[in-house]
Image: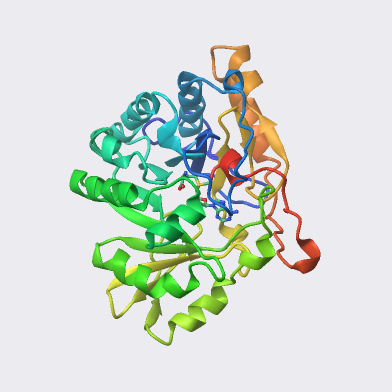
Length: 343
Ligand code: SAM
């Protein structure tokens, strides 16, 4: 049953879906644009949304505030690359006020790190304390091949700047067969040596890319078994509010996470919904169904219409996704790219 909660900033009943899951985590794709073109994520020649279709930063903040009013405790900004949206720091500053008032437990972002050297200090000043940085390889040439446009040295400088500013970092790496699988032990030692967590992610069949995902897909169950030749992995109950399951690597003393949408579907504990930069709300990363929040947002200055639209959307949150990658299903499960919904 929806029960009012008395917490700072919480104005309406909690968001509970038909399966009894409380929605407390909002991911916001602030732009679908990116300064990288990772091969498993985008085609090289992408068509991006016309700028006129985007919610303004003020509108994005209004939607976020409405969600906070309904009990959302964690917001992650993502994209595309969140730090390439012009003036994004004004949104981060505005959302940071909810952290200050304790209405929001955590404001965080997922970034490719290319702009971190410039923004790390401001992020910390606005209340961000942890960020995820995506790094799939430590080999500069391979990094260029995977990201097409990225420069690993710049990303490493960004990571150093973020650590200096006091931000805790988790590295995200998509496990790609024949591309970076041989490097994972080295990446574990590097991340843990630098005091960072590392999370491995299975490739998800989202959006058309130039290649074939079947060739790149590496089940993490296989990788995990291989890691046991070199490392002792102990399951730990550590949780960050996301879908990763963590182990402690005894040899390094660091944490290693596994995000396994394909080998182990994690939908039963899903607490998330995703807002795109055009105001579309996806109740599941792996389903087409979505709700438009832009029209109710623009139809009135008050929050009644948007709250109604949010309630209606949550009442349709599906039980889970059904990603499949195999030779018979070499089409993407969904036509939209990760950069639209936000990873
Ligand atoms: N630009 C930011 C970044 O690079 O982290 C944020 C957006 S990016 C879409 C978020 C995460 O999704 C990255 O870690 C990326 O590697 C991952 N990702 C993108 N496409 C994916 C796919 N098809 N399967 C699994 N992970 C994917």
